[in-house]
Image (tube, rainbow, N blue to C red):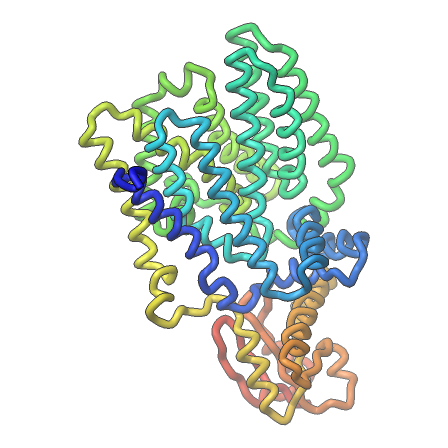
Length: 480
């Protein structure tokens, strides 16, 4: 057990175990949020693949690759709403392992690798999306594999060794990442840029640069000609995104990434300060650390410029993979500090902030007190409705044909809960209720993406009988 005698390695083990536990504990405490119900609906294993693609186009803001993966998993292990979050937690766990080996291939010392992996494991934002039945945890995982392949290529190129195996892996992982979410193509673009700089200044390896260039053109061609209709169609469902405000340029989503504005600014200032201090070390050597710098730069630059020139597309979770280079560079640059006391201060500060921050979040509080519910409590609402004399429920949306597609995942998910609990509730569209013989119905309403319903009630001469509040959800009893 000599390994455990090193304090940093012992803390590393504690931090990794903490990250693993927090990714799985109380995973399905909340019901699914709207976006998650869309994933659940699209990945129904009773439908065929073409229907998966069709449903994805109707409701999703991302491409179909992750929905098809979940669809395949559901065929194997069974169709249950709880499973889609388990998949995310598993990918979140696998990402810790891949991140460790990625750090090991970039950072000089094992201690730096332990620190970076601990920061990754403890990161509140990554834990949050390991609890989300969406594609972001998988996106991090597959982007890690793509970046790992790039680092191996750069190292093999420096050693003048054969890199064809890793180039093949790069093509596979980067293509999967790019068709999981379009912004992942920035990784390939950053790789091409560093190869261009290496060729321009060192006048070597034109072949590798041309291969990467042809590959990037292929991916962009694929987006423009084959996937354009999906991306443009789905823009209708992400029109809530707005261009970044001024405060975005003060921390670049670090407040969200690290749990609070204070912690975000501290991490941001440490990273910027260290980049400035060691700028010659990382900007002029054209190595794997330089690639990480340009990956951060282009991940922020390209979506931001596109948002201002065309339409808003940038959002914190859409560039979640930028945490990979941020955390590795933070660890790398801290260990470049020569002053031992100052170096240890920053190590303790970074690890301490990311560990003890969980005590102020519900992550640790959930072990000894009730955890707040942030997502709609469908279970509680359905249980309440079941015990009343009115068994029918409905949803409605703003009068817009585009938003009718939102109804399908919600009805599907609630019907799944009703069937699972062997209840007698029945859902129907609001329009069907208006022309049916039924006199009463329960309206299920969430704070988003639903709109105020008073005008619709008055317009259709309905009477509001009762309103019951649940976490992030209301049920309203209506009478003709």
